[in-house]
Length: 136
Image (cartoon, rainbow, N blue to C red; front, side, top):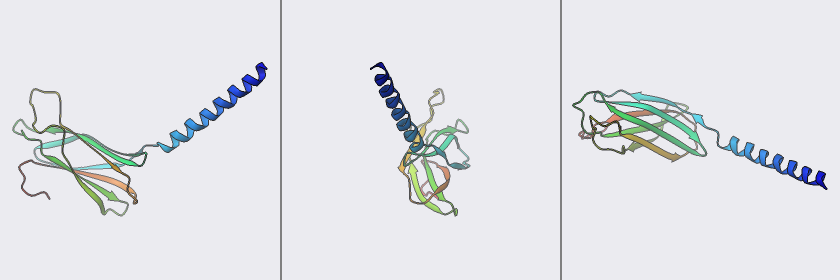
C-alpha cells in the first residue's frame, strides 16, 4: 500500500513539473532592440522593450539634461517591423508632468499593447516637449 502512495505521489510531481515547464515556455521573454532619438532637453534612460505572453511592453525614465527643463512632455514610441517600416506609433504620457529638482522620483512611462501579427524587431523612442505645437 505504501508503494501505491509513492507511485501516485511521483506521478503527481511529474505531471506538475511538466505543467510548469510548458507554462515557462509560453511566457518566454524576447528582448526587442531600442533606439532612442536624442533630445536637447531630456534624456530617456532605463529604456526597455520586451515581448512576452502575447504583449509588447515598453518602459523608460525621463531625466532633464539641465535645470531649465521643467515640464516633462511626452514620448513617441514607434514599433518597427523586420523590413524597417513603422508598424504602429503611440504617444505615451509619463506619470508626472513636472521635473522636481530635489526629488529622486523621475517621471516614468510604460506602454503595454497586444502583440501585432508582424514581427517587431526595433522600438524607436523620441521625447517631445510639452510646449511643442507640432510633433514630428
